[in-house]
Image (tube, rainbow, N blue to C red; front, side, top):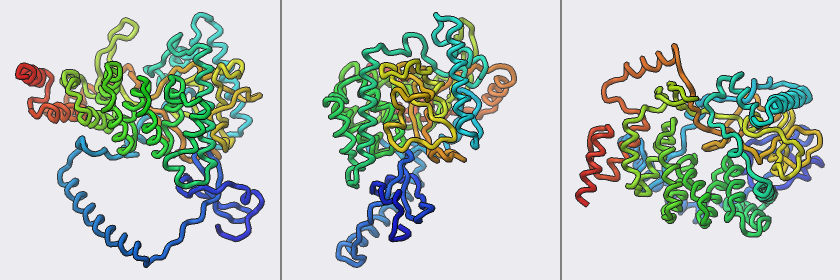
Length: 505
């Protein structure tokens, strides 16, 4: 703290470990320093523990630290020398380069609001937008999701997103009530975690899990609704929380838990979390578990983001999934991600490209969910954040509250889009919203034609002989590692290798 005397407001703030702060702020009245969480909640810092600088423990630690530093230098040099782009199966991969995600194109349900917009104007614009949605859907009662079709017509950037419509995007009342209860349990758990003053609790997140399991009758990881709520809300949380989620789901028996673990093994930004997820997957050998894992691993290998493809390759190798080798070999004959390929759209043959896009989670509620009709709990309602208005300070409010009078809301019992992964990313001129905001990533399959198609085809023709995309290199690495053999980098050659290996079994 800058001074010994705190103002009344600062004195009432809870104390927490400094590591929870995404930024630090000084009070303009008392000049006291306090932290702000990713939810916008303010807290005072716990005092740092004091220790003697020249204690025997410090001297011993210094000697050990020097030795470790030398070891790290040697290992780093070896790593740089080897140029190994894909991590061996006995260690975790490095986190994704932040700039690779920052280069991903952002799409939105509507044009963005100015950063200095008046909150009342923003709220009115959102309310008018909701009115348009209801009018579009009312024109044809049988087409419950007509608004999405209208938006795709008006905003080309939305075309090709993997929208789910009709009954497939909706859950029934019983499922919705169960999901609402699970969502509330996660909110309550986050609130308990945020209010806890024990620094050790923020690594294992004991307050969160105690509250969550109590709220769900110890069934929170043994129900479809519970696993869905956990994975959706905790996906962009800090590493320690995601690691604790993997630890809890490793004990769960449901196939939904297997899917979340597989996605963590492929998409999580932390090598430690991915490794923990892979270890958990090694223990899940049921037919349904294997089928779900296969689906996620191959989706990751084909993913139009090189770092994800490499992670999927690491996971396939770590899990020793030789049963996937025929599919991996087939992938060598597929177009490189971002290259045009033929696809059937509305019974017509079109050229399309698969590309990753990102969506600001807080600004696009109405892209993924329709407006709430009643605000009652069976709709799993969530309040739409209003630009120009500070984020709520409580996790309970951050994910929406039922029956919020007069506030624009969406209903999460209907979900049009399901992201592959979510991360917190910096946003410029974010105030009064947090500097770090949630972005959801998914694959768009977009039609290309005319000059754009010609330019893509010319780029392909200019490639050197033997060109391989990063995804195809990852696939080739899997084939070599799991067979111990080598062949030409094409599907036919590798199918011959696999057939010969099977004949010799």
